Image (cartoon, rainbow, N blue to C red; front, top):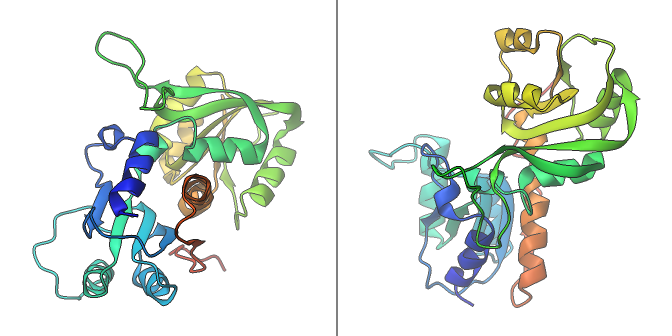
Length: 271
């Protein structure tokens, strides 16, 4: 089976034209005509992950974050990006990224997975993507696309209980959050990855809490005692993307082996 059949599936769920302008989703190394020997699924396409793929007999690595974001003027192996690219090309490994285009879909997307883990229902897009005419945008499967998700808990809980459950379910080492304001948590807004710029949208939905990552110091003040911000970390908020991709690939293809990487690529450690 050729790589193009795999990429056709992934792009039917998360079309490349849904990616943000700064992104670099799609096939980064390799050729669509290559026959697939196996697929390694990861969050970050680091050298140890690609080495793991080669050891497993995989010639395709599907990752959430593109290994190349900015243009490379030379590839000499002087940093982790160059080392990974050289190794992939030398060993005939295709690298495929499915990033902000996957973030943008409601079904099979990153945020839906978090919503499932937290037990949310009545899901809707936090910021639906729309055409200039105002009509919503849909992917090739006919599902709405946009940014973030808003959902409701089956049973409301107090703020401390919600954060404790969030920390446990998302396997977070810590949760950075704003001061408790005495709210009962019922409506939850979610945006995996760096989502601080979408706080106004979460507040516009009258969410009780906004779960995301990469908030800067002064951005916590923007909650204005109107919403609880819960920053669980970038890796932590996106780690289940790997399971989303694994399920999607294995449910549709059985003629090659697929693996979840055993390499932890989280660059942040906690003492």
